[in-house]
Length: 116
Image (cartoon, rainbow, N blue to C red; front, side, top):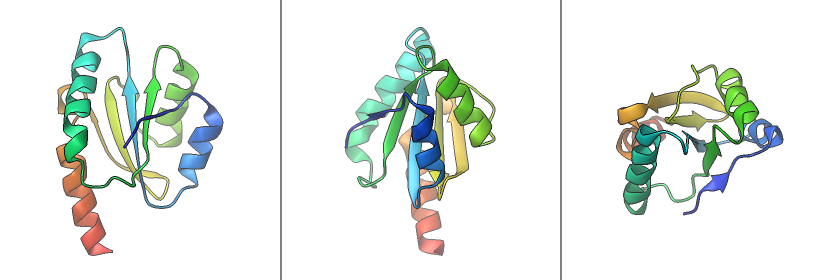
C-alpha cells in the first residue's frame, strides 16, 4: 500500500465522486508534530487492514490551495497534521495532531462495513 501524492484540485473532485473509503493525510514538512504523526502512520501502515483503500498525502506547504480546498469540500476545519476518512466522497471522521493514527480509522471502517 503506497501513498498517493495529492497535488491537483482535480484529484479532490475525483475523490469527492468516488465510492467506498478514501483516506487523506494533510502533512506539513515544517512541523515537528506533523513529522511525528507521519512517522507514526508509516509505522502503522503494515498493520492497516484495508489495503484497497486509496491513501492520499498532501503537503500543506507546497500544495496550500489543495489543502484549503480539502477543508472546504469536505467541511472540516483545516489543520495540520490532519487525517480524514471519507466514505462515498463525504468526510465521516477526521483527527488532528496527536490523535492522528490508523487504529480509530480501522475501527470505524470495520464498524461501518458491518452495518452496510
